[in-house]
Length: 237
Image 1 (cartoon, rainbow, N blue to C red):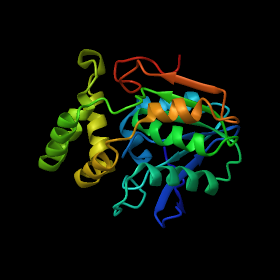
Image 2 (image 1 turned 45 degrees about the vertical axis):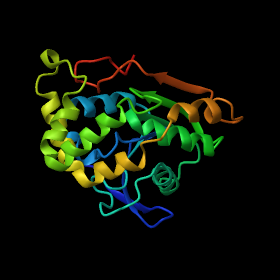
Image 3 (image 1 turned 180 degrees about the vertical axis):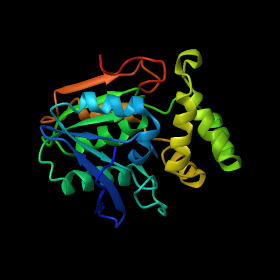
Image 4 (image 1 turned 90 degrees about the vertical axis):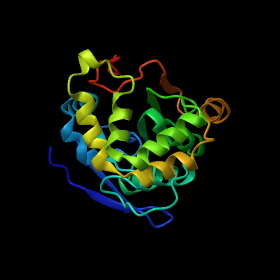
């Protein structure tokens, strides 16, 4: 699918790529970390999923800093600037009030954004999200070493995690190709190192669920640990 790519600039001067599709109540789709909407064509399952959740809605996709069509040469990958990416896209797309879909680790920035912008977000949906990084510090260091040694191997390893191989077919391989083209090893390692201590669960408990004016429609799904189409749970249920 051809998409009209637009650009906006964050408060710290980073160019962010985004696109708008359809009409209706706006739904902002946070990207899986360092994964580009320009690579969705490699995974028809994802495109089909987006068509279904986008029926009757305006979908807003974007690439976070360091990934895809957004500015790649950035040093700061902290949670604070990830929130800045969300804010820049929402402002550029003129979203006064909108819902957010946040898969995986993008839940961290989504939760914090909602906590800091009470009243602007109508609903928050977290899919395959974890309140804290699931890997130990030793495992994260091992992943850093793999990424810096072989980016292709890292992307294959990440894409295979949680996938039901017999049912997934070539899905993990296509996902690995999308990841490999969306970013690079240095950016991935920088992202890991700058966000080791992020605790999304703390945001959820202390900020999101107790702050007046935040969306009451907050759906959490911590059990589905594979992406749509890879053989795991169906996020459409």
